[in-house]
Amino acid sequence: MRRALIITALVLAGLAPLVRYHPAVPSAPPGVVAAPPGSPPATGGTRTVNGTVVDTEFGPYQVQVTFSGTTITGVRIITEPGDRHSQRIAGYAEPTLRTEALQAQSAHIDMVSGATITSEAYSRSLQAAIDANGS
Image (cartoon, rainbow, N blue to C red):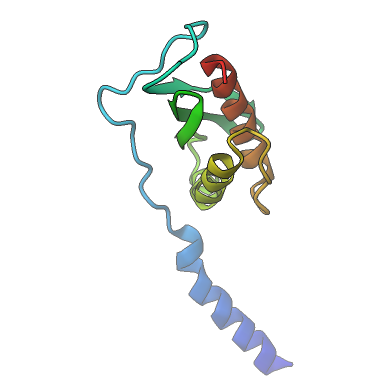
């Protein structure tokens, strides 16, 4: 019993740096501006549209979607809560959510386990961007 407690304590101590790790959050590239809401839908070419800011109990989330015509070619989180825990969760969930959105070509995507609120906010902001693009 005592040996199990010691092993558990050592494992938890070893995992502590991983839990505290916070990768840098990339900023928006200079010159990227979304079309204002209510703009005519894209019929060709590349267009970048920001979804609405979705407020959650942990803070705001917003995605930026790149379209080629009506095809979603890129999605990224541009606004997320300021606390490190939420940023870590968003960083963990974002690649999966992006892949889901690109495959589905819609906001009807599977949620990421352990990141339900982030997933729901991502999906809602994504749907707003799709609606703004007229897709």
